[in-house]
Length: 263
Image 1 (cartoon, rainbow, N blue to C red):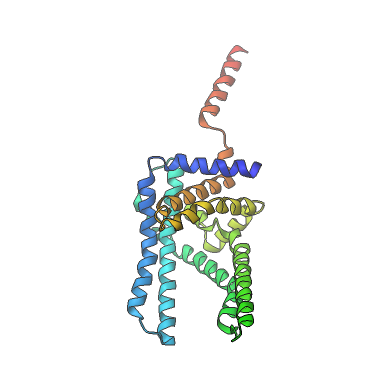
Image 2 (image 1 turned 30 degrees about the horizontal axis):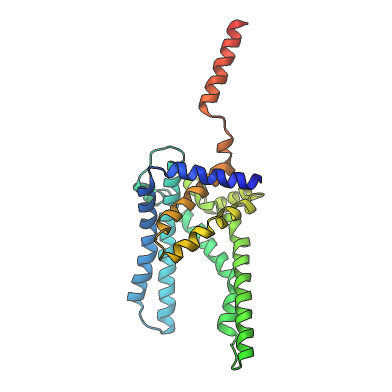
């Protein structure tokens, strides 16, 4: 019940933050996603063949572009943090990490990509090395094996990467923090909160399914909503929502002064 209340609170906070700011939140999301998308298109144009070398070069190019896109994405996290905290923000925040040691983001992005690749090795093994067979029974068995291994890879990916989910927020929040340090700090902060994080992500599943059924258009609103909710989760983990409101502090100070005056 407590986790459900927390989840509701993070979402309500996200809605409050996005109210009146949907336009810039959507524009920022589209901007950093466009970098990744254009990278895929350019890769197909530069390396159109199916030769092994061209395929490898194409994948390397896409990977490099995806790393650059992560720098923009971390800038988006910085913008959402500013928005959530009531600070000044703009689309210019997307470039923030380029001026604050972007190599830190590249380190974290590379480690996360490596971990994801490792978690998917069982799936790659089945897809590329195991043969379906010629009989119907053999093909059904291969399909069951493929589906089972795919689920295993997804679970492994979650278990391996989720502890580091806050790394990019930490980098956006701490200009002097190194990439490896952010990974360690994220793992420390996520202790005891991994289940909450997973349930928060899963709570958006119905919206994502509906979005896909509607040609993906609602994702323009769902994805910023998810980002804002995750930002609220991050701030809550830091203990920012546990701090007393400024008005309460002023009230307590005033009450103390009145008491002292009476005394």
